[in-house]
Length: 166
Image (cartoon, rainbow, N blue to C red):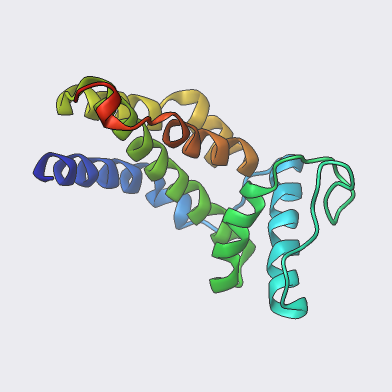
């Protein structure tokens, strides 16, 4: 537990260091996809606040904006954050910073499950969370759907530890 807290502190510090200027500006990622994805998160927010129900999104009917997205979990993730914050720019930035944290934590647990090595798990989590491609897709372009899948994918791969005798 102490090793994980040390790792989490380091991950939190590095995320804050990278995100401090990003979070303190009023700019949003300037891509069509980033704005479209945020629009879908806002549709989720409005559906919850106004209709008191989840929006109907499916692979055949698409999304409320008429786009085809078979996996709307990313918009739920950002929409939940939007329930508490009224500013879309802040919502997107917080969603991206939380995704960086969760990506590092998820990879840490995946590698720890397979190896039992805390140091290797820390290193793998840091490399996974702060690789240039992920940082380009999140803070620069605002692809919520990409960063959401990137964030949860290692959690989906974590098997039961007893299978490996770790």
